[in-house]
Length: 178
Image (cartoon, rainbow, N blue to C red; front, top):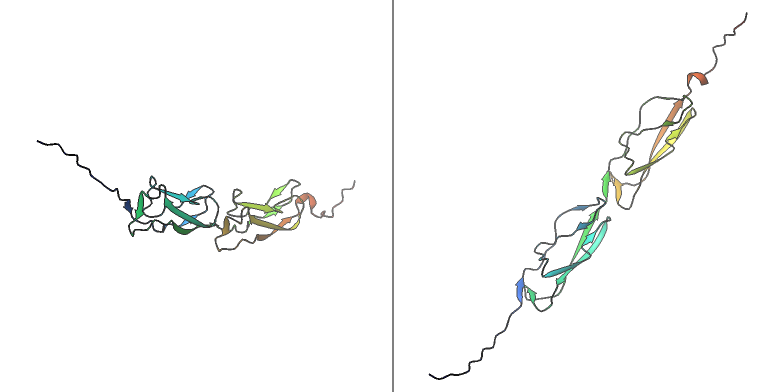
Protein backbone atom coordinates (compact mmCIF):
# COMPACT_ATOMS: atom_id res chain seq x y z
CA UNK A 1 0.00 0.00 0.00
CA UNK A 2 0.63 3.54 -0.38
CA UNK A 3 0.99 6.12 2.27
CA UNK A 4 -0.79 9.38 1.97
CA UNK A 5 -0.79 12.25 4.38
CA UNK A 6 -4.25 13.07 5.55
CA UNK A 7 -4.94 16.44 7.12
CA UNK A 8 -7.89 17.13 9.37
CA UNK A 9 -9.12 20.55 10.35
CA UNK A 10 -11.35 20.91 13.30
CA UNK A 11 -12.94 23.62 15.31
CA UNK A 12 -13.69 23.52 18.99
CA UNK A 13 -16.92 25.36 19.48
CA UNK A 14 -17.49 27.27 22.69
CA UNK A 15 -19.48 25.42 25.33
CA UNK A 16 -23.08 26.55 25.55
CA UNK A 17 -24.24 27.32 29.10
CA UNK A 18 -27.58 28.35 30.45
CA UNK A 19 -27.66 32.07 31.10
CA UNK A 20 -27.87 32.72 34.86
CA UNK A 21 -31.21 33.93 36.19
CA UNK A 22 -32.10 36.04 39.19
CA UNK A 23 -31.87 34.50 42.64
CA UNK A 24 -35.34 34.49 44.21
CA UNK A 25 -34.06 34.19 47.80
CA UNK A 26 -34.69 36.94 50.32
CA UNK A 27 -31.62 38.28 52.11
CA UNK A 28 -31.89 39.99 55.49
CA UNK A 29 -29.10 41.71 57.38
CA UNK A 30 -27.45 39.36 59.91
CA UNK A 31 -24.06 41.00 60.45
CA UNK A 32 -22.28 38.39 58.30
CA UNK A 33 -21.19 38.25 54.67
CA UNK A 34 -23.92 36.98 52.36
CA UNK A 35 -23.43 35.71 48.82
CA UNK A 36 -25.90 36.25 46.01
CA UNK A 37 -26.56 32.95 44.19
CA UNK A 38 -27.91 33.31 40.65
CA UNK A 39 -29.69 30.26 39.25
CA UNK A 40 -27.43 28.31 36.80
CA UNK A 41 -24.23 30.02 38.02
CA UNK A 42 -21.20 27.75 37.40
CA UNK A 43 -18.35 28.78 39.68
CA UNK A 44 -15.46 27.26 37.71
CA UNK A 45 -16.57 28.86 34.41
CA UNK A 46 -18.11 32.15 35.52
CA UNK A 47 -17.13 35.05 37.73
CA UNK A 48 -19.35 37.28 39.80
CA UNK A 49 -18.63 40.88 40.78
CA UNK A 50 -20.25 42.57 43.79
CA UNK A 51 -21.97 39.35 44.84
CA UNK A 52 -20.71 39.23 48.44
CA UNK A 53 -22.07 41.86 50.81
CA UNK A 54 -22.71 42.33 54.54
CA UNK A 55 -24.78 45.49 55.01
CA UNK A 56 -28.39 46.19 54.16
CA UNK A 57 -28.79 47.88 50.79
CA UNK A 58 -29.38 47.41 47.07
CA UNK A 59 -26.53 46.01 45.01
CA UNK A 60 -25.82 45.35 41.33
CA UNK A 61 -24.20 41.99 40.61
CA UNK A 62 -22.48 41.20 37.32
CA UNK A 63 -21.90 37.64 36.08
CA UNK A 64 -19.54 37.00 33.17
CA UNK A 65 -17.39 34.20 31.77
CA UNK A 66 -13.94 33.67 33.27
CA UNK A 67 -12.47 32.88 29.85
CA UNK A 68 -14.23 34.79 27.11
CA UNK A 69 -14.38 32.69 23.96
CA UNK A 70 -14.51 29.32 25.71
CA UNK A 71 -18.20 29.63 26.51
CA UNK A 72 -21.34 31.29 25.26
CA UNK A 73 -24.83 31.50 26.69
CA UNK A 74 -27.37 29.07 25.30
CA UNK A 75 -28.80 31.96 23.22
CA UNK A 76 -25.38 32.42 21.54
CA UNK A 77 -24.47 35.65 23.34
CA UNK A 78 -21.57 36.20 25.67
CA UNK A 79 -22.27 39.58 27.24
CA UNK A 80 -22.23 39.79 31.01
CA UNK A 81 -25.51 39.46 32.89
CA UNK A 82 -26.51 41.97 35.58
CA UNK A 83 -28.84 41.48 38.53
CA UNK A 84 -30.10 43.79 41.25
CA UNK A 85 -30.30 42.27 44.71
CA UNK A 86 -31.25 43.51 48.12
CA UNK A 87 -30.18 42.81 51.65
CA UNK A 88 -33.10 44.01 53.73
CA UNK A 89 -32.65 45.59 57.17
CA UNK A 90 -33.18 43.24 60.12
CA UNK A 91 -36.53 43.76 61.84
CA UNK A 92 -36.29 44.20 65.61
CA UNK A 93 -39.27 44.07 67.96
CA UNK A 94 -39.73 47.29 69.91
CA UNK A 95 -39.25 46.94 73.64
CA UNK A 96 -42.30 47.60 75.82
CA UNK A 97 -42.68 49.43 79.11
CA UNK A 98 -41.27 48.05 82.34
CA UNK A 99 -44.28 47.99 84.68
CA UNK A 100 -42.32 47.30 87.87
CA UNK A 101 -42.67 49.77 90.73
CA UNK A 102 -39.42 51.56 91.56
CA UNK A 103 -38.68 53.06 94.95
CA UNK A 104 -35.55 55.07 95.67
CA UNK A 105 -33.26 53.35 98.16
CA UNK A 106 -30.14 55.47 97.72
CA UNK A 107 -28.65 53.10 95.14
CA UNK A 108 -28.53 53.37 91.35
CA UNK A 109 -31.70 51.90 89.81
CA UNK A 110 -31.95 50.58 86.25
CA UNK A 111 -35.10 50.73 84.14
CA UNK A 112 -35.58 47.44 82.26
CA UNK A 113 -37.86 47.65 79.20
CA UNK A 114 -39.34 44.27 78.28
CA UNK A 115 -37.51 42.93 75.23
CA UNK A 116 -34.53 45.27 75.54
CA UNK A 117 -31.53 43.73 73.74
CA UNK A 118 -28.23 45.42 74.51
CA UNK A 119 -26.69 43.91 71.37
CA UNK A 120 -29.20 45.69 69.12
CA UNK A 121 -30.33 48.68 71.23
CA UNK A 122 -28.98 51.50 73.34
CA UNK A 123 -30.82 53.13 76.26
CA UNK A 124 -30.56 56.73 77.49
CA UNK A 125 -31.81 57.87 80.89
CA UNK A 126 -32.34 54.34 82.18
CA UNK A 127 -30.16 54.65 85.27
CA UNK A 128 -31.22 56.96 88.07
CA UNK A 129 -30.85 57.19 91.83
CA UNK A 130 -33.13 59.98 93.03
CA UNK A 131 -36.94 59.94 93.18
CA UNK A 132 -38.63 61.63 90.22
CA UNK A 133 -40.14 61.22 86.77
CA UNK A 134 -37.71 60.45 83.99
CA UNK A 135 -37.82 59.98 80.24
CA UNK A 136 -36.06 56.84 78.98
CA UNK A 137 -35.21 56.51 75.28
CA UNK A 138 -34.37 53.23 73.59
CA UNK A 139 -32.80 53.46 70.13
CA UNK A 140 -31.51 50.98 67.60
CA UNK A 141 -27.70 50.81 67.58
CA UNK A 142 -27.52 50.47 63.77
CA UNK A 143 -30.33 52.19 61.86
CA UNK A 144 -28.53 51.55 58.56
CA UNK A 145 -28.99 47.79 58.98
CA UNK A 146 -31.95 47.48 61.37
CA UNK A 147 -35.46 48.85 61.74
CA UNK A 148 -38.17 48.28 64.28
CA UNK A 149 -40.62 45.55 63.23
CA UNK A 150 -43.05 48.26 62.07
CA UNK A 151 -40.41 49.66 59.66
CA UNK A 152 -39.60 52.79 61.70
CA UNK A 153 -36.28 53.74 63.28
CA UNK A 154 -37.31 56.49 65.72
CA UNK A 155 -36.39 55.96 69.38
CA UNK A 156 -38.99 54.42 71.69
CA UNK A 157 -39.72 56.64 74.71
CA UNK A 158 -40.90 55.57 78.15
CA UNK A 159 -41.84 57.55 81.26
CA UNK A 160 -40.20 56.12 84.37
CA UNK A 161 -41.30 57.06 87.88
CA UNK A 162 -39.13 56.46 90.93
CA UNK A 163 -41.07 56.91 94.15
CA UNK A 164 -39.40 58.28 97.30
CA UNK A 165 -38.19 55.58 99.67
CA UNK A 166 -39.05 55.37 103.39
CA UNK A 167 -35.98 57.32 104.43
CA UNK A 168 -37.02 60.10 102.06
CA UNK A 169 -40.69 60.32 103.03
CA UNK A 170 -42.04 62.96 105.38
CA UNK A 171 -41.64 62.37 109.10
CA UNK A 172 -44.58 61.05 111.12
CA UNK A 173 -44.70 64.15 113.26
CA UNK A 174 -43.91 62.28 116.50
CA UNK A 175 -41.34 63.86 118.73
CA UNK A 176 -39.48 61.91 121.37
CA UNK A 177 -39.49 63.75 124.65
CA UNK A 178 -38.64 62.75 128.16
